[in-house]
Image (cartoon, rainbow, N blue to C red; front, side):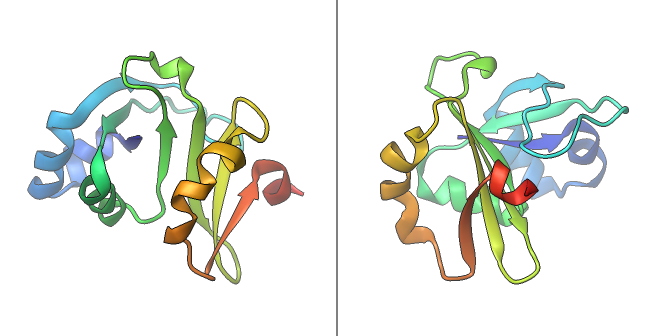
Length: 133
């Protein structure tokens, strides 16, 4: 799992504790727009993608930004080879986990059974098509 921060926000606004957590875990820095909403802004942002492993590090990343976006890729893969983009967003009555996947149905079949125990009734799983419609 790779979570992101913009380089500008990390440098200027992050606490020293957050920087100490993120900086040693940085795996990629790029401006790749992989987010499952809207279009890329006209201003280029450098995105810092940092790798977490294990439940404690995932929890800490979500504590840094509870409305998170992360990509899932295999250990030695290049950034472009990510399998999924997950983004937790607020809706009017709940939180929505938006899932963008390279192979349709793959997330529900392979990943969801492993993580659905973390869902509450306040979180709904949606495809980007459902969110945009």
